[in-house]
Structure formats: structure tokens, C-alpha cells
Amino acid sequence: MVHMPESRPYHHGDLRAALLAAAERTLREKGVGSLSLRELAREVGVSHAAPGRHFKDKQTLLNALALAGYERLAQALNAADDPALPLEPRLTALARAYLGFAIDNAELLELMYARKHEPDASEQMADAVEQTVGGLARVLADAQKRGEIIEGDPEELNLVTGAALHGVAGFIAAGWLPPEVALAGVEDLVHHLLHGLKPR
Image (cartoon, rainbow, N blue to C red):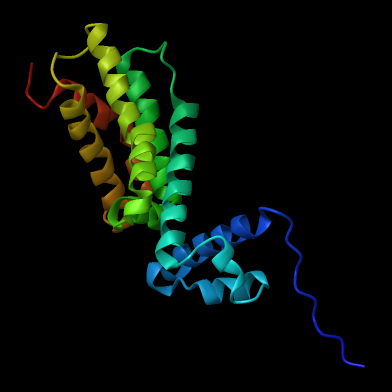
């Protein structure tokens, strides 16, 4: 008698998590163009229709992956933040956490920033950005209140900070800057951001 292989059982909530984990592996190894709900279903051992219970299409899956990435980035930044520190060491710790996330999750970070997200997800995405990138603006606003940096719109100051960090992350992803060199240079990067390049 031939025994058919049993499909793996999934309890409530497990299938969505399994699909996201498989999708992230595919994203890392093959890129966003290789993502397919049918292939993911095959990989996790369910029928090709099963992913439809959680993701109506590929774009919904990409949105969920991006949101999961923002959640992990927020956790990394929150874990690194110490509001009691002066701005320079505080910002250095946050920059190191951001670049560490970028090094470990280059493809995911690109998806988070570069993909167009469907209108249904735009509010969630805006909230996710506010919890991560927006958090740096709050750090700068705190520093302004303590007289550590110049007055001005914290969002504009955050644009400079975010552009510098994401630029370094882009150099790492492109292979122009070795990760260990980027991490070793975080203190200098933050120092230049805060003090400028002019001689004193």
C-alpha cells in the first residue's frame, strides 16, 4: 500500500508566520521577483490555495513583509536607545543599531523603502515609518530641548540624519563599503553629522 505524504498541520496563526518566514528566505536568496504564493505554498507544504486565507495576492504579501521588517527595526532601535545619554553617544548607538539591521536585512530594507505599497496598507506603513525613522526625529527634538543641537524643524534635521544612515546602508548593500568598516566608522559618522566638517 502506498502512503501519501501527510501535509504539515498548521494551528491557528501558524500558516501566516510560516509563509512570511519562507517569503523572507526567498527574498534573501533570490530577490523579490522570485516570490510566488504558489511556490511558497509548496515550500511550507500546503495547498496552493491555502495562502489566500492570509494574503489575497503577492502585493499583500510584500506589504506584510515590509511591515514585519519595520516592526523588527523598531525593536532594534528601541533596544539600543537610552534617553539618559547625551545626544552623541545616544545617536551613535541608534546609528549602529540601524546599520546592523541594514547589514543583516539588506533585501528586506530595500523592500521596506523601495516598494510601492497598496492603498490599503498606506496608513499602516506610515505608522510603521513613524515608529522607526520618526523616532530619530523625537531624539533630535529631545536634544534641542536640552540645548545640545541647533534650533529648527526636527523633521528637517532628521532628514539629514536619515539620509546619511540610509546612504551608508546603500553603500553596504551595493558592496562599496564592507559592513565591518561601516560599523567601525559609526562614531565618526555621527560626530561629523553633529559637528560638521568645518575646522574650528
